[in-house]
Image (tube, rainbow, N blue to C red; front, side, top):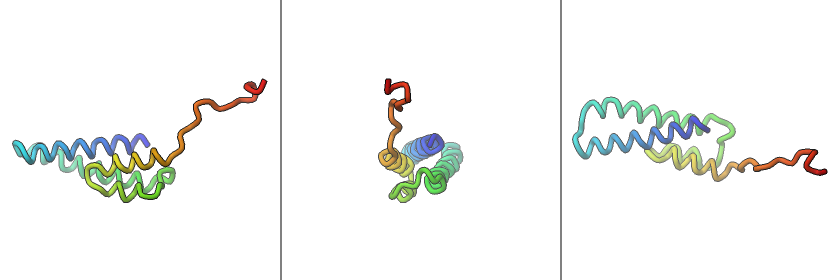
Length: 96
């Protein structure tokens, strides 16, 4: 799940940077570096959501295909669907 969080954040940030660059100064260096970074983060997000069996949640894969925010949407869907661990597990000594 940590890989998905990182990839989703990089995907969203890199797309934001690319769009800001496009609408302002349009520096070629930012485009040359940001494009491949965004592409790899996008593909990583899709692959992680698709290939990790624990993350097979209906609708998460479709959300991962949305460029820019898809990783964050898929992560949100997975976290809502995955039951959280109990705060305290009873032990045999608790019964006394």
